[in-house]
Image (tube, rainbow, N blue to C red):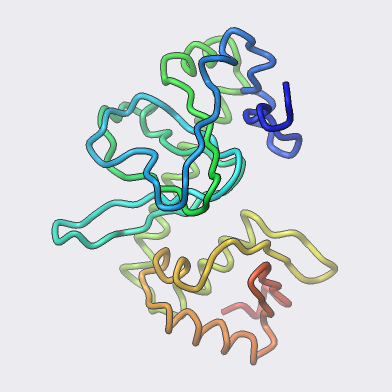
Length: 226
């Protein structure tokens, strides 16, 4: 297999190792990667929920539309993350949309039936999938609670803490987050405006709590991030 075809496997992501087609050769041809251009949709609301997907490269936006057509962004996912997993929980038709945010975004689809077949004989895979479902549910509950009960600054601070917990790397006493989000993206995910995100981020930088550029966010002191 060439490097580009090893799309179910990355050494730093356990789930890829479990689902690597090399370990299930009969599935390698069936689950070849799909490539999408920026803004191209992987699926739309109300389409049948037939597959679960894993991101090999690029970013995927998960969202939905209100009755007035306004877009609600629920998640922005990157390499190694799974989406479309609600099909495993009994979702017959998609409630959300999935859209590529970058050119040459590659995703690996696997049918729900094939995945269930793999899960039957693989307890590690079953446990990881159930953890993903539980984690996404808890994350959505926290976000709803934040939108209802917290002000804009608190929502943005909570989001930074969440990113640090999920994707941060310790650098001495500081926490470094590789940043793939614009201020507009953060605004969409926190129910605020781009201007508010910029203002809060600049305030936190002036307070020497964080530093940031287009590629990373450095949290200097988690205890002071309030």
